[in-house]
Amino acid sequence: MGSFYIKTNRIFSSVRKYSWLFVPLVAFGGLWLPKLGLLMIPLMTTLAVMGFLKGKYWCGNLCPHGSLFDSIIMPISINTKIPSFLKSKIAMALAFTWFMYMLGGRLIKVLGIFGSATFLDKLGYIFVINYLVVTIVGTTLALLVSPRAWCSFCPMGTLEILSYKLGKLLRLNRATDQKVTVARTEMCHSCGKCSRVCPMQLTPYLEFSDQNQFDSEACIRCSTCVKNCPAGILSLNNAGEALRIKEETDIDGYRKRRKIAAVLKRVRPLGGDVNEYTFGLTDTERVECRPGQFILVKIQEKPVMFRAYSISSFSEDGSELSITVKKMPGGYGTDIIFNNFKEGDPVVLEGPMGSEFVLNEKSDRILFVAGGIGITPFVQMARDAVEKSGCEKDVKLIYGVNHSGEFIYDDHFTRLKTSCEKFEYIKVVASDAGWKGKKGFVTDAMKDMDLKGYKVYMCGPPPMVRASLKALKHAGVEDEDIYYESA
Ligand SMILES: Cc1cc2nc3c(=O)[nH]c(=O)nc-3n(C[C@H](O)[C@H](O)[C@H](O)COP(=O)(O)OP(=O)(O)OC[C@H]3O[C@@H](n4cnc5c(N)ncnc54)[C@H](O)[C@@H]3O)c2cc1C
Ligand code: SF4
Ligand code: SF4
Image (cartoon, rainbow, N blue to C red):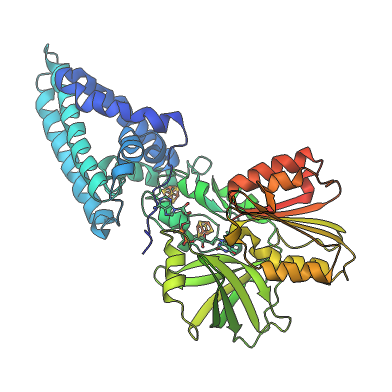
């Protein structure tokens, strides 16, 4: 089974990368130079003020322990589920009480020697010991459970939450309170990636409010979900901005999204690690798909989770649709689809979705560029572009793979080519000495083409998309004529 929680980059600024250096400085350096502990006083003050304005923003962006856990410990952490007790209010209350008792009791004792020569050393030492204990406990949990397990009940985090509650009560943090914001919930793939990468193991996609925001006080506003959302619909914004984004986001292509009852009719292996899944649609209401759209396939109930797949073909009468899935090594969803989905099983689909890749019917010159599994949307799109125009349009398909054995739907495109001379089907192989055709990358095939005036649709791995964008611009294709998705 692929792993649920994903270790991914959480370092988006130099402060996040290097602030961990503060930890050895105070927790260990302070054992020799106790006055270093006094640095904790401005640190705790900043944290409390920041909490008032921005919730747990400090934890996700500035905290030295957070930086230690994310940048140093994460690569070697077990990274498993944080037990729900550690995330409970009881754990937070216990840790907060313990911390305040330890700190408060010692502070009262030391205040008794106020004015003496050793006062500052003794005061600093109290903070050093507290910081050392947090470092030891936090690091142990980061290694054995999850990098941010400690942060679920850290007393400083609780202090920020208390301060934040006050800010909300006084209505003084509305402009500064930036929360995870979803542009439109209709566009969410319900893939759960925001939850799988979240250091705090929260579930934003299941909890967006009517204002399109994730209201959790436990959110450390670290942007990891924002950077990883495959739909690109997340941001960190205040309530006013969230409203503006909601109003300005076009959801054409998502309006007909709905739950669709289906049955898995056929599983067709296409070679290697790719299968085609054909679903019989059992809903009485007809499902209307447009070439280039995608569909969501439910892979599990708790927590509910779907995977997005381009519709590789659908029947005109709306009774069937197919998707084509490549098994991802260690992939959580494809593991479930390849091992558990059996012919005859009921399946829940949701969609159809997407407008970004729907064919512009007015264009006479069309270039499709596919890399690997990125060919799937073009199965139907190329057929539509060629057959519906009565072979009138200039349609080209550049299809790149690593090894010649990886071409799928080759007979489909070859048949299309036989039926329409004008259709150009260009196969490119990157690294296969035995391949007699065009060698190299899709960008090599573009070099000899006059592409001015073409509408270009691209789907493939991000490096292919990036290189092709450069090559297309060089070939004089306008930005507004290029549509792409990364597979
Ligand atoms: C609009 C759209 C259309 C799509 N169409 C198709 C299609 O037609 N065919 C198809 O096969 N796929 C398609 N996809 C991709 C598909 O939705 C799934 O993402 C894909 O099947 C992998 O799912 P998974 O759960 O098996 O992989 P996941 O487990 O989600 O892994 C996906 C990626 O996450 C990262 N990751 C996972 N685990 C870790 C880890 N432990 N540490 C670090 N990184 C990790 C890796 O980068 C990995 O490649 C499409 C996606 C979108 C958004
Ligand atoms: S919900 Fe997003 S911003 Fe909040 S803690 Fe999780 S990953 Fe970070
Ligand atoms: S990561 Fe997936 S589930 Fe989360 S908001 Fe983005 S599309 Fe939705």
